Image 1: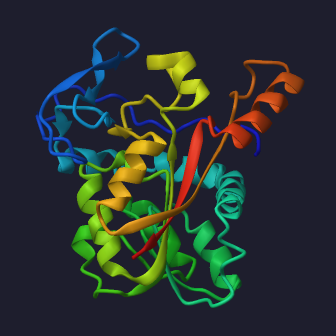
Image 2 (image 1 turned 90 degrees about the vertical axis):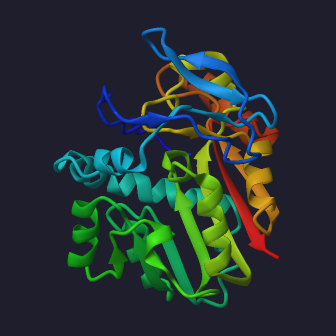
Length: 284
């Protein structure tokens, strides 16, 4: 789709409060090792019942939120890569059919809106835009741009039921302590027939299978790593039907000659083994 941008990861913190939690997808409490981190410690486990890959024990939600409010580094990273990230988001939304379906524009919520670049672009297209961003520095940056952005997590925002026509979440769901509760809240605030666009790394992709614990998305900040199967199940159990799932990214930039990378990238789209996926789900 575009040249690779280095994935942001906060520095690994030792001594965080952690606690075992049941699987957010099926409620199971039996986990088996999936792969370890670079120093060999157990990093990710797989639910023995449904197969969802996760970090468990989980860090405390307050500890997770603090990662994104430690100085200005995260804002600087997002600002530096703003144009590239916007391009990637627009390409992903195009793959999911967003622009072909946007004839009747209404209220759209972008959760994890970073610097607000996508919101600003959608506002120019005629959407009534709203954003959530728990990084206080980034939320304030958005507000200085004139955008309606709150720094509260979704579950604390308390939107009225059926408030939005569209909800988007790009590279967010893998960072959340309880994706099940998050998806249920998205369903509650979406109108019937409203759509949810979710972008996240694909653990069934070629790169994840090739690199295992060295995969670029197997990082400290990613509490969950979804496959198309587990993400579909999570959405369906909260009242969504899956309309489309697209993947992209066959090989990372720099690990193969450009012609080989181009071949793998085309194949990843066609045969759905890409490194990243976007799912378009509609509320029943």
